[in-house]
Image 1 (cartoon, rainbow, N blue to C red):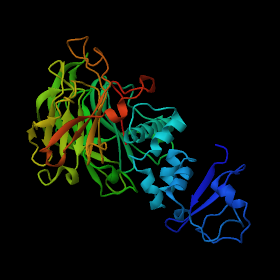
Image 2: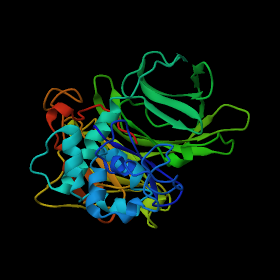
Image 3: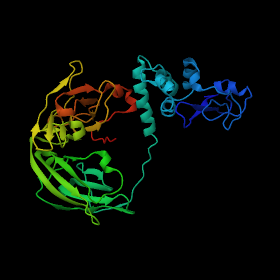
Length: 421
């Protein structure tokens, strides 16, 4: 934009220094440049980048709201939100989600937006900005030495304590091996982890869930770290046949000076046989006092040859199962049965779903009635929030329409995708 003003926040809270780009005549800073003034202290509005001219003593916050809106409209939405709002409270109030500026930002960067209030414009802007950032992702091949052979059937892949782990899948039939590689090693290599204990039946297309929080996966490697991993359901026979009704939990330890070791610590029955479902760990800080070790929330998948929309909970202290009651707005309804979807625990749901929430996205409805699981049927192209996770007593479904009701050309998640945060 001709005459666009570039802002840099200073150390002082809401004092800003502004410098015009070339051709800045006609802007607020450009107008100030016409009045010669002594060199200004940091924190005051200046007209030049290095500058020796400006209006002494004049701060941006001293100007009226009309000027603030004019200044913000010269920026892009993400620039205003990231650069100005954190250091200038008087600007932050103009950038609230229900502010009129978001319709301007959306139209300026992505084209006209029709039939949307300001809050919807802000939400839509965030979605399109996220998609724009995704276009900058670059893929690179990582040389890797391993003896896994070819694998399908959704082997579980996860990171913990500086290691990458790969569990199970379908190789020469259902596999139940665990391989690990240190992420700092060059070249990167995966070696098989020694297992002990009694495992459940071998399956593939089950769900592998780390029973630990993301924060514990970061930082330096620790020799006294350990983590438990849940393996639930899956298929017992080739050709996507015979769902399993068993679960198992193994623990990974990191002995000092040695490779990771693993041991099965618990196996048991599930209420229903299930495969291609989701299994989301809800940690104790969210689950509440009723679940001192958190719980595992199972949703959907194929059960006895048909797609499901059931929810089951495994208490990770007593290893007991329950089927919670879930509310929903009758105008919204409930999620359709599905498999091969994603379920991601997020610290905050949508604006209408405050607090931690699980976001269920996409999947497919392929089962024994429409061409066989999980490749038959069709993709499911919607998303749902599951809120009320504390104590699991007030679980509630709400449709995630705020970001999925975009033009189909932008793409939607179908079956077999990966979602992470």
